[in-house]
Image (cartoon, rainbow, N blue to C red; front, side, top):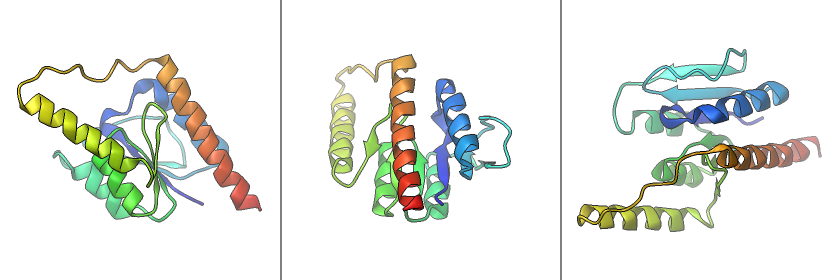
Length: 154
């Protein structure tokens, strides 16, 4: 069975009960990795790891622990790229499933927006996270875990 890794530093509160229910229902071991205490809930299936403060400390720990086929939940596109490179899976907070087919496009768009901001242009950030985003995340997570569960029982 796979493990789930949560890039916890920016994990939306709206997603915590969704993820907690999935972990409990399917008994999936989950690591929440952040540079501060993040609480999804108490469970025998959840481990909390606090890493040193620093831009990539949590990301580096996730990549170090990750195995082929594991799932990472992150809004960090460079981390998602590292995850895909290790033949694992990544879902963002809004329900986007990153893949080998789309990750380079997301990286290119992220880099382009950074260049635009660096040139002094004011850009709008992402729209505020809302319940529709949480629902899309729940749908994608359930779809991913259902497919995984089917292949496990075949």
